[in-house]
Each structure stands twice: as structure tokens, then as C-alpha cells.
Image (cartoon, rainbow over all chains, first blue to last red; front, top):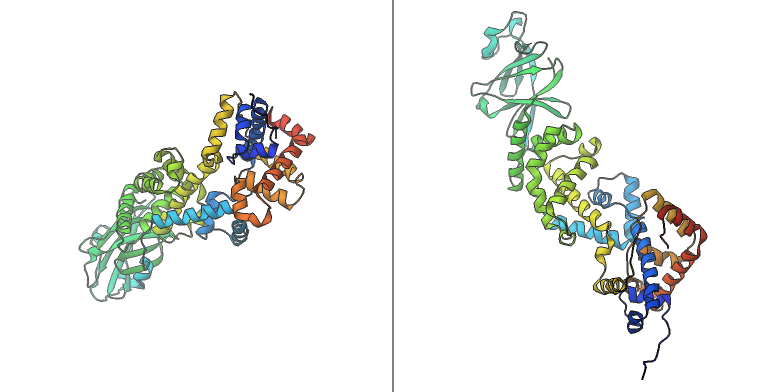
Amino acid sequence: MTPSISPHPTDAELLAWLNGDATHSAHITHCPACLARVGVLSNEEQFLQANLYRADCPSAHELGEYELKLLPAFRINAIAAHVAHCPRCSQELALLRTFFTASPLPETGPSAAEQIRVIIARLLGDVRAGWQGPGAMQPVMAAMRGEEHKPQIYEAGDYQLTIEVLDDPINPGRRALFGLLIGEEAPALFEIQLWQGDHLVTYAPVDEYGNFSISDLMNESYDLKLIKPELEIRLEALRL
Amino acid sequence: MTSLQALAQQCAQETHRFFQRQAQNTRYCLELFHRAIVAKQEEAWELVYQQYEPQVTKWVLRHPSFPSTGETADYFVNLAFLRLWTAITPAKFAEFNDIKEVMRYLQLCVHSVIIDHLRARPSATIGFEEHEAQRILSEHGIRIDVKVLNKVQQEKLWEIIKTRLQNDKERFIFDCCYKLDMKPGEIFQQCGDQFRDVREIYRIKENILARLRRDKEIQAFLQQNAGKQQA
């Protein structure tokens, strides 16, 4: 007895079989014509998917920048509207949040800038102009300097700062900065930094006697900062 | 100029304190990243890579989608740093106030390169039954050979196709099936109120494919751009 031959499935039914919604499975797997037809449908489906998948979606990275609030307003609005109706982008966004939650970053607490007390140094005068304030200190390098240089004296809260700029003897055409910091607390806790805008150009330690020096500097303007935990002495627009 | 090595050492200490949840001053790290990313100093970039590579590797391994990529962690670590290098503009970098924000962005780079990898091969999401269908086709010598067009060609193709979709239901089904890789069963599950049953969704797909297959402009476009491909 031969089995009854069922009619060929429609393309809709072949697509269902292809997508795992098994209908007419017995017929399809034994029918060369239907298998050939499934092959055509599969090619078409995969071609469309390979070339149009996520064509309207923002990139994963832009979606992430949206989450981190790093996008301009017009993109934020566009992506918010897209995510509201796109299940894949919603899923990816949820996945990103899961990833962030699973890989937490420590809270930074108050930023360093918030914790630091800043004192702007005030120029009192230069040593040779006759200023004879408390300490009347001079940097240890003073003996090596030519007569033409004038060490500048600054006051910053409980600290006094002497700064002198010379031609760099090792690097022709460059400048060298020498300084002395005197105050109640150990100067060695400080570090000197030179900044231009938001850019840290260079830095150096302050020794136990309060001396510091930086060489090989361009003849330009710098913001000088003497920093220790919770205190920053700032001398702005120091021209070398 | 500040020695890069000294800067990297300071940054390493800051980063260590950061991950130990101690208060920290992050100016050195920001400066190192600034030199690497904004000033494009190659040596600074190498130091950034050396310093953060172990942390980025941990993040790759911890990403929920990493196991389904079939790639090594190193592969994504390299891509994540490359993404960081190319994605941060000086203006964007200027918005980072501390190392936490830079680290968060680096995490985003890890996530986006993994997701990009998965987006490029949506077939990774096909289920067992579909694999079974493909196996049966393969056993009968029926080969699936999909041509991938370039971006411009893809956009042109979509411009043509969207004028061939006749109503909102077709546009919705096309988007769900081919642009979002949703199965008809999944579509019906989420939007069952719009369709009588899942068979209606298959019938709509059937109609769309038949129309595109008959369309002379589309066939000419495919012959011109994709050899023997049909759609």
C-alpha cells in the first residue's frame, strides 16, 4: 500500500518550516521540489537579513553614548524615539545596563578639586627691591645666579614662596625655574606642577628644605601649582 | 616635559587606589589619557594599553554576551582599545572629570565591540530547529550562498524595497523579520492583537517575498550589484 501524497505546502508553510514552526515536516523532508523551494526562500530571507539587519538602528556605541549622556540633544531625542519602539535596541540597552551593574566602578566621592583648598599666591615684591619681610629668604641656588635676575617673593596664606627664572645653562634657549617654599608644615609634602590651560606640562617634588627646580622649559606663560593633600597654592600666569 | 614613565607610575597608583575604593586624585591618569588620545602620543598610548589591558580583559570575560561570540578575549580587548582611540574626540574627552568616567567609557567600548560582532552575524541567534532545517537542505545538496552588499548598495536596496511595501502591516512585518531578526512566533507573542494568528504573519512574508521576486527593478539591481543573488 502506498502512502497518500499530500499536496505541496504553500510558501507560507515552507517559511514556517524553515523558521522552526514545524508544519508539513514529513512531506517537505521527502519532497525534492519542496526542499528546492525552501532553498530559494532561505536564500531570499538570509539575503535580506544580511543586508538590512539593524539598518535603522543606531550603532551599539552610539546607543552606549546615549546611555552615558554624551550625545548632543538632537541625537538624544532621535535615539530615545527609536529605542521606544525598537525591541533590539531596548534589549541592547538593557544588556549594557546589566554589564555596567555587573562591573561596578567605585564611587569617587568628592573630587580632588572639591577637597583641595586653593590659595592664590600674592606678589609681595622682589628681593633686590628691598623687601625684607619675615624670613627674608632666598633660594639656595641664589648664589649661582647672575645679577640681572630678580627673585620674586609671594605670600600664600601661611606660606612664603620665592621664585626665580634663569636661562637654562644646560639647554640653550630654554629656561629654568628655581624656587623655595617656606611654611609651617613640611615642604616635602608638596609637589610643584606647571600647567598650560588644562594640560599638565611638567611636575617635580619639593625637597625637605622647600627647594624645587624645573629646567628645560619654553619661554612661555605657565600656571604654577604647589600641591599637597587638601591644599593647593596657585600662582597664575607666571611668565618665564 | 614630564617623563611619560613617571606619569604612568603616578597613574598606576591612582588607578590602584581608585579600584581599592580609596579617595584619589586622578589628574595624572587624565593627563596620560590626554596624551594618548587627544595628543595622539604613541608612547603614551602604549602605556595606557599596558596599564589597563588586564582590567579590560576582565570586563570582556564578564560581559554577558561574550560567551556567544566564539572569539577570544584578546580579540575584543584589542578592538575595545581601538574603539577608544577612534571614538573619543578632544571635545568628548574634555567632558571627563575623573578616572571613573574614563573607565566607564572604556567599558562602553568593550560592550560596543562585542555587540557589533554579534550584530554582524545575526544568524548566531537562530534556533535549533532552523539549524536542523539548514542541515536537511545541506544534505540534499541545496546550498545557501548569501552575498553581502556594501553600505551604499544596502541603502539603495532599502530605498527600493520600502516603496514596494504596500501597507503598515507589511512594513511592520518586514522591519521585524529582516531588520530586527524577529521570528514570526516572537512577533505574534509581542503584538498578537494585531494579527489573527502566526500563520497570517507567514502569509504576509510570503506575499512580500513573492512581490520582490517578481520586481524587475530589484532583480536588475541585484544582478548588477550582487551577481546571481535573488530576493
